[in-house]
Amino acid sequence: MPKPKQQRVFLNIPYDEQFERTYLAYVTALSAMGFLPRATLGIGGNRRLDRIATLIESCSYSIHDLSRVQLNRSAPRTPRFNMPFELGLAVAWARANPQHKWFVFESLNRRLAKSMSDLDGTDPYIHDGTVRGVMREVCNAFVRPNQPTVPQMMTMYRDLRRSVPKILHNAGARSLFTARAFSDLCLAAAGLRTKYLGRG
Amino acid sequence: MSRRTKLEFEPLSLEETAKQLGIPQQRAQRILSLIGADVVPGSRGRRAGKPRIVRYKLTRKSPRTP
Image (cartoon, rainbow over all chains, first blue to last red):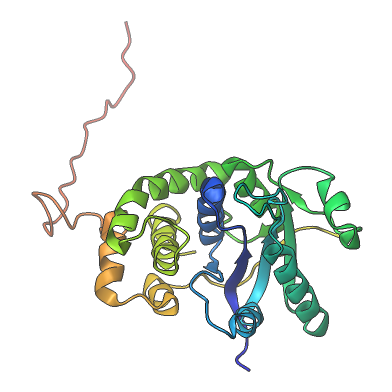
C-alpha cells in the first residue's frame, strides 16, 4: 500500500445545495493551510465502499462534518448516514494506523453528544454553520509555519466564490458536487493560496 | 494536551497539485488564469518585460523652519 501523503486530507461532508457555502469554505481553508482536499465525489460503481476506504487510507488526515443530521426534504424522508459511516471507517483505520488523524466538525454545540454518544470525550470543532466559523475552526485544528489568517482566507473565499459560475460553465455542470467541479475548485483554491500567501 | 495539530509539510506546487487532482495542463492553465494566479508581476500591460523604472524622490535635507 502506498504511504499516505501528508498533504492529503479526506473531506467528509454532505453533498447538498444547502451546504454549498460551507463546502467552499472547507476547500478554501484547507487549501490555505497547504492541504490537498480529497472527497468521495465521482466515486461510483459496485466497489464504492472499497474505493472510499482506499481514499481514506491514502490521506494522513480526515475531517468529518456531522452537522447535517436532519431528515432530507424528499420522500421518503431519511437522515444521511454516509458521514458517520465514513467517520467510523476513518476511526477504525486510525486505530490500526495512529499516524492518521481524524477531526469532527459540527455546527451546534453539544449536539454531537446527543447524535453520537459513542464519541463522548471527543471535542468537536464547532463552526456555527458559517464560512468564517469553518475557517476559524480549521485554524484551531491545525497550526503551521506562516499560518494564514482568517481575513486572508476570507479574501480567498470571496475570489473562489466569484469564479464558481465560470468553473461550473467550464465543467458543463449544474452542481459543484461533481468530481470535475471539485477538482477544479481545489486547483483554483491552491492557485489563490499562491496568489495571496505565496508557496509556503 | 493541545487540540492543535502541527503541520510540518510543504504545500504542493501548483503543477503537482494539478497532477494529483488529475487535471490536464491546458485545463489547469485555464483555471489558474480564471482566478489570476498565473500572472507574474510585471508580465502584463504596456511595460511588460521591461526593466522597472525607479524614481527617486528628493528629500529635504533639513526640516522646514518658520
